[in-house]
Image (spheres, rainbow, N blue to C red):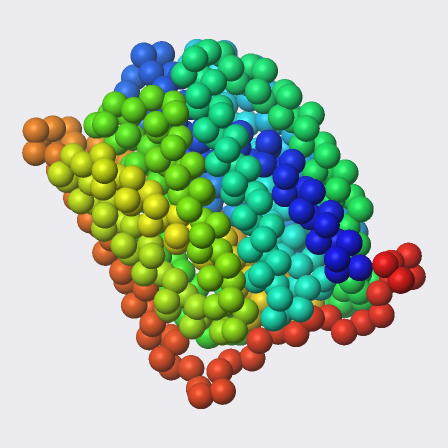
Length: 440
């Protein structure tokens, strides 16, 4: 059954990026920054970019809602519903007019699409914990992620080139992409969850403080009950805050300072990082398969520290070459991040609480996702307006570096406090597969 599921997920990884490229915060940020330049004021346009950048992480704040809504329900059917909803939203984005109302229509549709994708990611991690053992999850996730990021990078470059030549290329790109992404939905419909009935029974049996809830207090309960996970989340918060502040700033400077158009902006913010991810995904996957996620993050986080530092140097010294170097370093960091994001919580979560632990991780990511872009863009605009000739906005990148450094040091301290035998790593669910999946 694992091989069959893996084959289906590979097929989905080839076609679902037609949806993801439409709501990718960096890609849509570059498109909006160029397409609506002159339509609204520069300050308002930068705020729209900040909101779009925030949407990726901020959408995760509703992860506990998805956990609650899907509790005890068929996971595959629920995921398919989210995917179809996202297709409808992505097609609508392609018809948004180049007006102020159209700008906010794009922003609203992107946010709604990211909410759907957040639910998909939250539930997918639960499926992976059931279908793949702990010592192969990272490698399988890495292969799926490699296909996905290469597709998003390629589609992003193609869209950027098309928009440079034909400003209205998105009008046909998004509807065609939505139709093609239905192949990914069909592939996911065929995935079977190992021990699905037992998993749903375990979810329904959770009561009291262990039960999923619509209330954000569910995050607090999980963290109070697991102080090690709470310390891990604190380090993640600092690292992620610095990274998420950097994202909209890069989108803004590639246009305002370096004067790059669609293709150049998408290349630096999205395509180059994603094209370099496959180089490191196998390396990071082997490391994550062998070690606890805390030990993994103690090594991996320094890629982000380096990326934010080089971004500061690029902006401070007006070096487009360094901007490309920072993009490559960010890609090396993303390569490990895509693995740890999907699997890290499984090194802490008790059986039956995988969704709750992923919900905590995703919700806190949403909290910093709401804060970070507005803090970064707000500080940048204030400093840049104070005296544009001094390039004071570059110092916001330095602040991002300090935050990622604090997160890296937090992981390092946590890893050094681990006992010699390490902490427990969750094992796969040991149950008999459902009758319909027997022999597959």
